[in-house]
Image 1: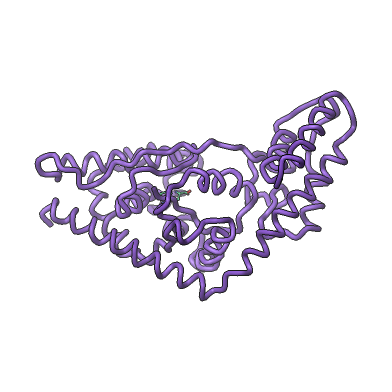
Image 2 (image 1 turned 30 degrees about the vertical axis):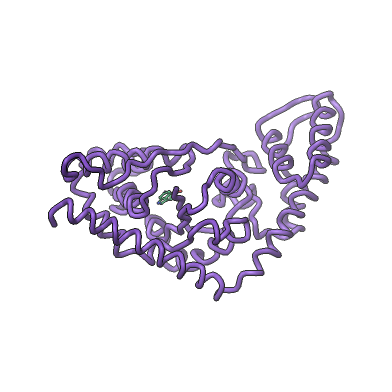
Length: 322
Ligand code: TRP
């Protein structure tokens, strides 16, 4: 298995509950966890990517991505191998096919071809290189990454058909592992929780005072009524609850709310308590990793990732007769 994360900002509890927690629950030992800093360059400036790439690793470690179960590395640490692999794959796909990938298609539809850079065109090919070089057969992904993964499957099939002598499979065709998609919504009622709408997002780095303020002004529903925003708050509370007793309290609040009682104030107080307890634990855990610790973990991960990458590259070159 392999999973990549783009280092373009601080993580929110939406990232944790929607992607990282389900990943931890489904990932097998030996999974590659890497920071896609080259992909980050698609739409963020290099210094921003450089600023966040170690922080994201620290976040992941603090959230339980254990370096004894997983190997962690920066994509750029095996950047030469990755770029070379992408070069070998590029001739196998047409521009027209890439233009059908939704991320690019939507961008072009909105602002014309001038608005999309070549990194965006190349994005799925680079992603395929990440996957092939680590010989991953299963990629846990959310809905938004399915089209990218399809490109990788097509590329593997084509490469094997073209260059796999006697039907040998040089590249593994990766399958998606659909993560149970949780929709954690923005607290102020504007779509999904996202770092681009900071007022409606709870960041893992938020202080307890900030969390309290954000939750107090969060959108809920009138007594007796339900809406997606309140459902999302309820989900946050139950998922972050440390024990059954707290979960039961959330359920009671919900029952009473649906029965028409005015309980939103109490509900929010409990939610603030639960979120802050989680964040406090996370923030303390985060401090336990020094920069040296992180660099050491990444160095170890790089060695393993590079060894695999080089072996796949030589297999590709041998098959291609290059
Ligand atoms: N595109 C992924 C995202 O934005 C990140 C990514 C890059 C990735 N390469 C990958 C994910 C390889 C899985 C496998 O979330």
